[in-house]
Image (cartoon, rainbow, N blue to C red):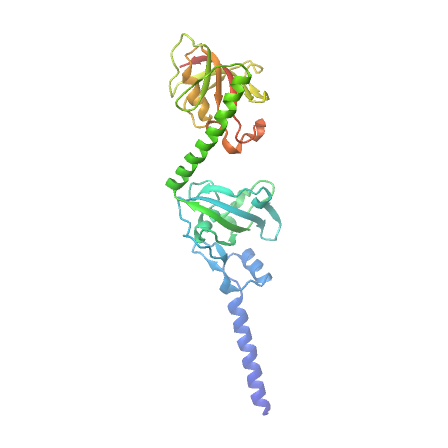
Length: 305
């Protein structure tokens, strides 16, 4: 074969190869993420990039609708730094992360990334630091200005209405279960309690002669908090100062906001609170209160004003 022709084909082959390599090379985006994708030989055609700078791949499309802002979602995830350092995995606990898309509780990269998937879908979301934890970082494990990636599985997505209906159904089932436990506890301890329409069991030892506490007032309460097995997790008497808080405040368990007005100022007694009106399935780990635990409070209403 003529050497000029051979040379021509060789040059063309090199040129075509260079074009192909250039087309598959990630550049012009986030340098660290581009480097990771190039180093791991992830093909450019398999990666999408949003206008905000989020990269993502879809390894399983899922079979249901796409998630959207406002949905209550359950997501399994593995989060790693862009160098591959493992930060956390929800699979270790067996419990997917639950949150509402767009409610401000998650980093922007997660809020923007999850709606890119259908229910049942799987993939990887590569998050530039400005869509993650930014200059502040994320505690001891995620340094400032660190890019991260999430391997995710969108387990479920529900509208706000569907999520509320599911929560009410689950709460009622849990209330029914715990009502039996509370009634057995009352029988075992030879106690007779009343039950409010909200589901609070209460025993009035002294009704009190003052006014009934009203929502919005600052109430002062002395209390001893226990589980049904007798474990004492907190009390105000040892501190020598009653707890004062605004009745109806969202940072207090619902059972207190519902139970305190069952007594007048000066009143004393017990309230027994099922967990859906207490700390729910998550419990209160710092206080060593397990999930789905009914709570017993011996309490006195000291003041309301």
